[in-house]
Length: 429
Image 1: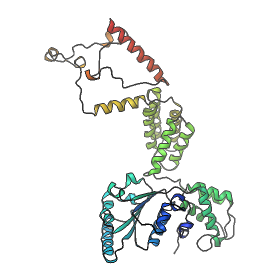
Image 2: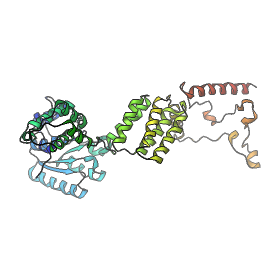
Image 3: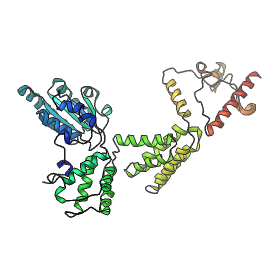
Image 4: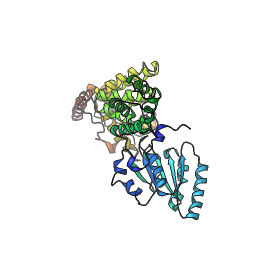
């Protein structure tokens, strides 16, 4: 049966393992565990193709424990419970736990994850999970507290180039028998496109090998054909999604139009929903620009409407336009900060009464009781300014909105200063 190159080329021991020097290097925590330390439950957290599954398999072989693998995509709660009962029975008979490996453990729901907990606590199983998502958010707290989290990094381009050289020379497991030749530049290009994912690099070079006869030097045109068919590394529901939208947001906030455009296009070409991006750009217009440029929100909404009206790819240009506009616009989070401060105040639970001067008095009774007394109609006064307090009595004098000196807010600051001076003059009169 056909076995993918990535599977054939899995390292057989830690010395063959690429990258992760902090974990499997001379004084790495996993190296010491492999060399005789006590084996505890753990989770490997890292991007695709960095070696999580391979490390789990090595652990099972080295520990000589019964190995029970699960795929969170394919396994259900019934299978989990049955396997846990079998592990409990196994330990009663042999005094040895079962090593349970759960690939993509973040895809198990709360009930499925909870099913492991009593067996981890009792020592019936050693649980080893692998996940591409942040365990803090994806693994239930009681279970996570019993796991050691090992963070795996993406492989470096040099690591991947070294793996590719090995597979080109390995006639037993790799492509050595095909005598395929690639230039240093081609290997570097594959490593760059692989984005730290060894499995991805193996898939690319294996696809390239299929285009060539035995003993052929791979042409740049053939390599480009293979690379053109490879999707960008991206998961709309995972950490990469949040990392990339964070990069776009922070680039706009930092007034870097080139970076903003790069991250926007990166997400679009990776299959992100353009309307999700449009919504986030509207949010940025309010959160990071606000009244420093009131046009930003209107233009962001116009870009959203353009994307909705035109669709892709034509509407994407409107998103690019607003991303650049927002990046170069003056920045202010004064509205955002003011809203958060007032929101926190209101949610504190204190419901201040509306001052009498702000209340409507549609009936004689309400007028007699003081409703509306002290109200000053702004349009009756010069400049349309009154000295009437509009905050609850307990909050009179509070200042929530503090405009910056950037963009339109510089004019707003001067306007507020004028309003204060006119109010002071009215009070004296």
